[in-house]
Length: 107
Image (cartoon, rainbow, N blue to C red):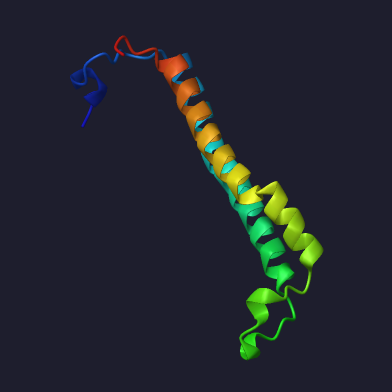
């Protein structure tokens, strides 16, 4: 629908400069998402390495990691938590930038 923003309360027409800036902010999203995915995969590969080479057929694999030092490092550092926080905060930051450009008049 053409000009649908005009049918939404508190939205205004944007200048071409604002549209370009908004699109520049929006273009950051996929790149940031790709980096977050790489970090998450890196953390998962570290978690996998903790148990690499462990024979789980005896049912004791969960009690004897092959790399207890790495397991302790990961448990202490909680990288999954920080990656999740980064994802949330970066999404929020992009939203804030979008709002800074759009400057809606309502709460």
